[in-house]
Length: 261
Image (cartoon, rainbow, N blue to C red; front, side):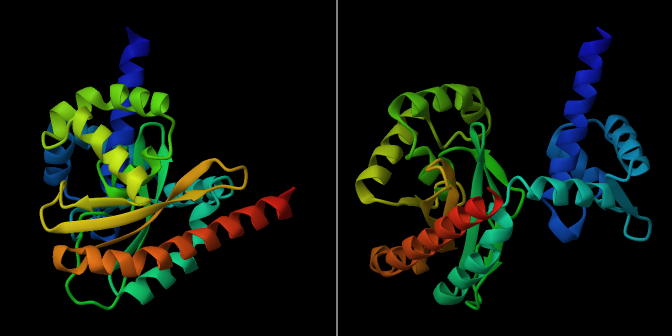
């Protein structure tokens, strides 16, 4: 029983960290944390106290908000040596945001999820905020995750959908495994992924896959914008440039791999 309880505590602590990470620089109040995670207030407060003590979380006493702490930064720096795509992609994501004027993003895959790890806003004043660094969804829900999922084999797609079936039913009622199968098929035929506001009405996105040095799927590069900014004519204009940017990132990944060999 003690092992189960210990495991549950670790899982809850990680849930807290992910929730705080999703707020970026805004920080999170205890009340918002409990609402977002489903944890009761005493449990959430106890976990926060331990995380603060360990340096994983910092509390701003004046704002009464919690932020990721210095130990998270240290772990992130160490992990980035392995997951180098984020550092290599910074300039490319910025370049995409500059040429499109909207929001550019990079997503990576983790198990059956996609995680946004980079976001850069262009100069167009009206933006969509559906995707932030740290935001994670089951593969197929957002354009980046759909782009990744469509690169899987049919058997891999089915295994992923099976893993996420309960989560889709619980938290993504507008989606279904059958809908995602159709979206995968359409993505393969089109040559890129499109999310037409299925998750957040009015928030559209397009994305293309990025391959690593060994031709493994490394992530997805995409553009998010309000609906009026991503109609078919503009998709046709942006996709060739987005694919060129993805190709440049793939070249950087290959160069980095060769340099470290």
